[in-house]
Length: 156
Image 1 (cartoon, one colour):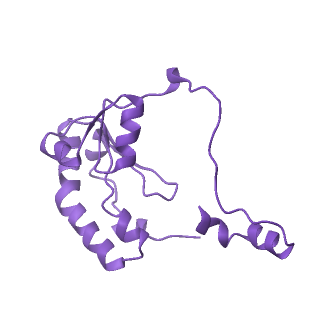
Image 2: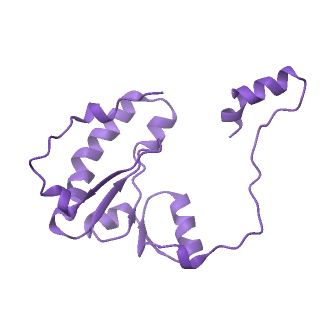
């Protein structure tokens, strides 16, 4: 958060006015969680500690990504293969990790959807968008498919 706030226009203006800058977040509160509106997955499959912590707090079954790949089932599957190369600006590492993801994991996910083992795939590319694919979409072969590089274009 500190690096995000450092270059923000608000902080630059505060610095110009000799006012303390905003350099962190303090998240706390005394609100109540409305459990009735939350639809928890049956299981969380991930290799990262944040997902493990969320599963523990919500009392949800937690397993590794390899567990899901060995026995695909409904639940929340967190694939963070691209996070580290993306975080460090390692474009070669990102491309390698993306190719590996496309060759090893995505075909299993797609085939599980196609066979009805899962009902829907939601892909969140961490930019505010969500791509959804369900079993009915798999059958719509007449739809024009856009190449992957179409979705990788970013308008700022």
